[in-house]
Length: 460
Ligand code: ARG
Image (cartoon, rainbow, N blue to C red; front, side):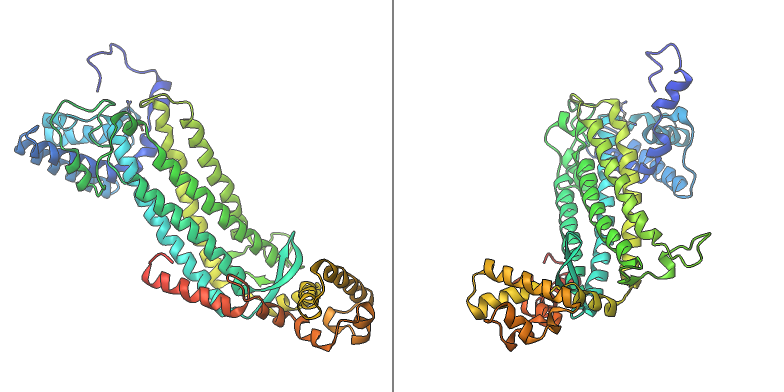
């Protein structure tokens, strides 16, 4: 491509370090689409003759058909997908192919291709996340009255419902969707026509190519356009945070599937056995969702570090932007799909959850709140009285609701038999009706909203 200036070919290692074709051939659809839009605009502007533009567009379509059939270029000497496609185009249509690169550079070309690819990736992730939300909402709806221990510090804290717990992940995924949607809206401008870095002297129409490629308009600074990879970073940051959420849910599943917890049994389809211990059912899929989060966050870090020291405008370091985005996208797709499958098919052992919710003095706060409400006791004093009550129950080896009234009254005589109404786990969860609280009626209301939003796919 630059034989005019160079007397010698590249060193073998140069050829290898320089080539991005092994990974950027994944951009072929976007590369062809960008070139067709560019050629059509060159024709419309009279920069190319209408006849040449038609020949070039027909040739690009023929190359696309070859790629579609699986005949993707492999030769490292072609360097990248842009040069590979132009080379193949020349083989098909002859020297007129050399006119396609008028008024553009690979710098704006790759920036355009990659934006188009990341935009599609965002749409794909958004679709998958909506499916995960549907699964969470469906399972939450089955379990709005299923009491389980709520934890802080992984210590039994207060009873909650399984529906409430699952809906917490719906909210996290909702924020993930909003991050991807924000990023998509922000990035949807076309860098095509920024050329190498300074724009071009040809009378191009950047609005036309932007529109043809589904962008909201052209970017406004050519230097920024060829060196901006914020869209890829936005994708990776949203992906990293999403992976982090999936990892937390996966971690819960790992804990819940363990024998001491026994809150879920994972279906065979998402478990593996042990080659030596026949009793084992290992939650491998959940562990790998957790593991993949590390790699996805690693991809995000990788591109941040690639970009952080680069002066304007394009530097070849930026060729390394694609592998981490591709890797993160593949891993995130697997993680979302696996997590969705686990949410859909896991058996929740609600008897076991209820039994544990009843065992950890989880209604102690309800006793303290009752003393405040019914006995006009200051909360700090109520906390103290409740502490002594928990100690008495622990010593007697019973739950709070099983302590006889005499024992309770010996601790504080302001307690009377009405207190038993708040000491059960069902009464406890039913009482927490504050907005966003665990009461079944609150959770059902949020589920209804979420369902409506998912049905209409409108923002909740
Ligand atoms: N393969 C290159 C990349 O991915 C395309 C841009 C090359 N630009 C250049 N000035 N050498 O970044």
